[in-house]
Amino acid sequence: ERERERERDYRTQSVCHCASDGCEIEGCSSSEEVRTLSGSMSPGLKSNPDLHPCKPGHKVRAALLRCRSPAAAAGILSFGNVLNYMDRYTVAGVVQDIQRHYGVSDSGIGLLQTVFICSFMVAAPIFGYLGDRFNRKVILSCGIFFWSIVTLLSSFIGKEYYWLFVLSRGLVGIGESSYSSISPTIIGDLFTNNSRTMMLSVFYLAIPLGSGLGYILGASAKVAAGDWHWALRVSPLLGMTAGTLILLFVPDPKRGSADQMGGRIRTRTSWLCDMKALAKNRSYVFSSLASAAVSFATGAFGMWIPLYLVRAQIVQKTAEACTKEICSSTDSLIFGAITCVTGLLGVVIGAATTRLCRQKTERADPLVCAVSMLGSAIFICLIFVVAKKSIVGAYVCIFIGETLLFLNWAITADILMFVVIPTRRATAVAFQSFTSHLLGDAGSPYLIGLISDALQQSYTTSALWRFLSLGYALMLCPFIIVLGVTRALFKPLLINVI
Image (cartoon, rainbow, N blue to C red):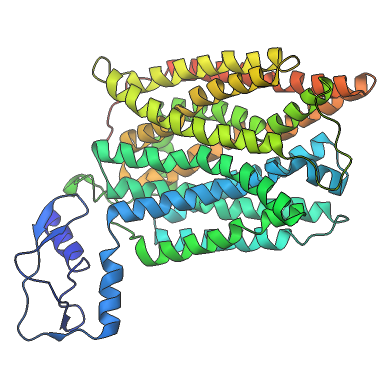
């Protein structure tokens, strides 16, 4: 009975929308079928002879409702996730220019990403709590409008106010935290089983795709305008567009509606009870720790690899140190393109591999994560071995290492949706985000910069030593990834706790 009520409620908001405003949309008849949230087909509502033809305003509203399908909602949310990560790494695409403009050291540049991630992870549990209790699409829209406006305003900060520029990145992190914490739970409530795995794979494909496009956007906008500040003025406009689309076309489905759990969903529990349950969920805990290792590496790489490759070319005498107002962005463009391609390959290969391995073992998900992380650690080590002699060889190692690393994103998200009940999924996503950032990329960019600065001060500063010191600092990444492999291997059998 509860399932029939839910489907009846959804039909009244669907394509036909016959009787809500006392009018009837053309083409709405008893023979039509309406797709429900659960994916089943149900007969449409019967036409009422007492209804009058709709006015133009009603037709516009009906057209908007027609676009509010689960697939369209997932596409819009994925687009928003692309913009989230695009904005995050636009700064990394023009890091040389920012360093020269404000006159800061390596650790000062690393502080940008660290402040961003710290504010992001602190806000995540708050938005997780709100996302499990209030209208999710309103929170998403407010968050995306907030970070768009702050990013746009930060492009006008003068060179004597670097602290204000750092603060603006912290505020952007708060806005983006709302999106990353809540949007996956809407997809989780719109789809189930293999459909949910596929849609989450598309959603998390936005992480490497958006990151790569961030480098490309930052470098291209800088070159086109002749000013690196314009790199921060494009993504805000796209972000406001995404926020509007979310308000218009993304529903806020009932929590657990796609799982068809009916009476098995208990009443919502307190936040403290949710946290205790998550702490006892071994699959959730170990997957979160493994995610932290991946975040440590991706955060450090995203900030420092383009600059590391620039220093490698200076050592090889194939390039000169930047002394112009606008520095070369070739390495940022190449690294961004590689990140986009490897993200696509990683998500596709990860989804296909786990689907194949599930036929042979119930531990397919954690095993695929562990093997891919171990392989990525090996190729990341090789980057620092070959970069001094061959930039092409370094790019090949980056390509393979990133592909293996990106296998984990969608798999980890699917694990969470599988082992956490719908009424606490937003809290679970938020706390996993908090943990992975706290132990991962919240400190890795600044820590790598700090180690690099310390090594440079210990020896005579030269182009070679600037290159080597950053490489030695980045060697910490594969070590952390190997620690994450042990966490992935100790994940227990995945049992649906619902």
